[in-house]
Image 1 (cartoon, helix red, strand yellow):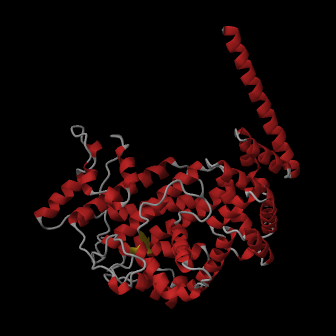
Image 2 (cartoon, rainbow, N blue to C red; image 1 turned 45 degrees about the horizontal axis):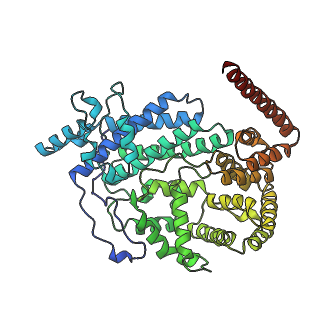
Image 3 (cartoon, helix red, strand yellow; image 1 turned 30 degrees about the vertical axis):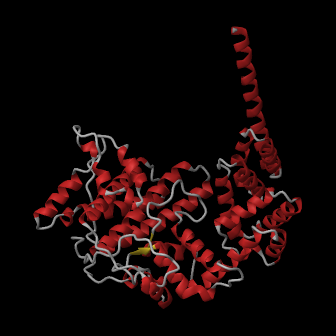
Length: 481
């Protein structure tokens, strides 16, 4: 069935709008040029090809990856079965198709210059995709430009195909089982997004709305009115510019923010945007998504499900409380904030990744009493299952940071959380040249009881063998000289 069932209303391409300006002052919607459409089609084709290739190289042993693979194949089939969407009746459109098809330098052995620059890929905020395309080889299968026939849906699809690529790259890079579990859950959410997009393409509905796209559980009056406000400056229900999203948050939910400090509402809404655009809630991604200047309806839907949000206003109030605590933790009153946080129960935190990072940093604060208070706070958090599971993933992944202070704080945080599942990753810190970090790693591992002692003996044996090997190499060099 043809995906040309969607009416292409040429909604707003990404623009820059000041979050402080009123909605009525938003600039007029610019037209979408043929060059923009062609560039978008090329990017979608390249992302789909990259995603299909990555999935082929994955074992796909987990049901989550098989589900994602199935949805990618289904969506790809729908899009590739109607490349006529790129062709119009005019000769100009026919030439446009030829320009798109000729835009890959590796398809021509006579031309060493890529046409991707002329399609303004850098202007789209996806220069990393250009680099990946530049590394393509003649052995790669022919990449066909793709489009749904709707500019707004193409933009949303670009965002979510890129998220899928990042998730697969991050899954490959991690060897921590709880992290992989979180990433696989995110892959399932993205597979559901691709399934909904496929359904949209196959629906005979030229005037689709957010209510037609969102799952039934999320079709509350509050969410639908909020999103309608977000897209009021454009003609697409699929995505809006990030500034419009924040402007609508400010318009509708400022009263939900307990602003005890100047500018706190802006911090809360900015934080919500960052969390919504994150690839995974607890595992840091290898790179940012290609489109930070826009928010898709599907991203909002994933965020609501990921955080189990029932009422958006109530969620913002909770986020506001955590932002206030976070500000206090970063202030001279941080010791007082830690005691208050421990007293009111740390289970009230979402927690945000920046909150976890701040608590870890306080483990190595210059004030010894602050360090002790932070350790006490995190030790109490070990009894909160939801907090602990997310914190253990975040801190274990942070052990791979290039910043020694982050490694040190994360190591001590895992000790407080009694994260025995992270023992092998903590043991790896013994390879560090930083003496304090090595000491913290030993102390943490030995605090894990029998499991820690076994890991200690194993790492101590490896360390001794490594030292003997270094000594023997030095002896050999001396003899040779």
